[in-house]
Image 1 (cartoon, rainbow, N blue to C red):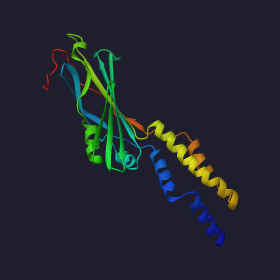
Image 2 (cartoon, one colour; image 1 turned 90 degrees about the horizontal axis):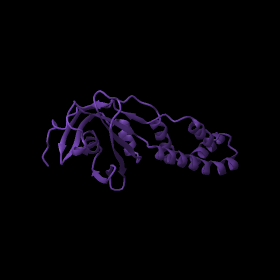
Image 3 (tube, one colour; image 1 turned 90 degrees about the vertical axis):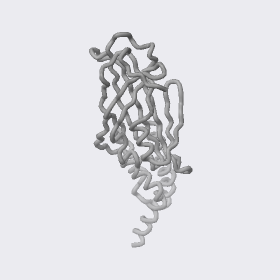
Image 4 (cartoon, rainbow, N blue to C red; image 1 turned 60 degrees about the horizontal axis):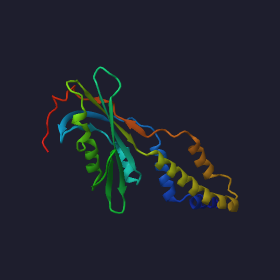
Length: 236
């Protein structure tokens, strides 16, 4: 009985509850899941002398996405626009927008950073629902200048949304943090107590396994065919 108590005390000393919870969350986020995200609609129009697009998505962030943000980890949402001629597979113009989202635990708000080729904009939201609503139906995206569009030619805009629940850099830092925390506590205690079970080795075993991807994306959504001359004109 005494040995059992010593072992229980030892495990608690080298693997505190906060680290245990964080580790379990990390492993849970590494599991794959079915995602039914899709883009409902994609509209193109001309505004401020530029080709712009608006879309509406459904189930873009699942319960897992909410748990990721609430845990303090960041997520990345990428919008990939391809402008092409209907009869061709390859696009003649590419456009990408990136949204990085994280939760500010001190201010209890969600911080969304919109990154485009020429600018960076920060938007604050009070709740997860507000954040999700914005990502599912963001403000219009500027694709290119209207003057750059070919005349009297049918075109088609394609959009795909990619979501990364734990960006690669965040995953690397998290794995290092957990591994280092366990190792620092484990080395001294194992020598002192001569306890044969190494939690550090167990963690290393899981870390050596190839992590399952937490990336997922919608299918490509295509707009109706349009020409430069047929674009709907939106007022400012």
